[in-house]
Image (tube, rainbow, N blue to C red; front, top):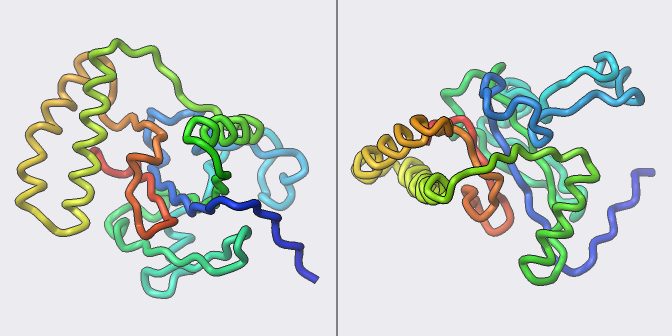
Length: 211
């Protein structure tokens, strides 16, 4: 007999796809991307307990399982298959790029209540976000950059080169200013509101592009 499905109260379930490069220096030691092998899983993972390894699997591993560019994974909450495409990472290094798929149940409640519940869940699971004290001017630039990045990715997905060319100069200017104040342009906010949305219940956080 299989395991009983997890009990879900009224709310929604989101599939979250996170893709990043192993050589991205801004996420070293960040528990959203890396994990310490627990003693009880050492044999299964074939790694010594305490070893730091990336979460998820290499892009090459996902491609090997794909039907064309399409991957199917079981949603443990709904017990229905979740399908997503790897096509947007077709040019990425299959071994240096990692992809993690997780399913997040979002309980009902106000945005603040939901954020508090999910933050507590992540902290219990070893979530260790990178936090930096930033001047107000840098926070403003970061917000503008995130909005422009979202627009740029949307234009890229639509093959709208004119819009990409229009956005690029301002993005480059923000990158230069953030680097001047020692804030790398590839540092991202873990903010699902700025994620790429594929359908009503799938979100993508893509750390593989400078934009």
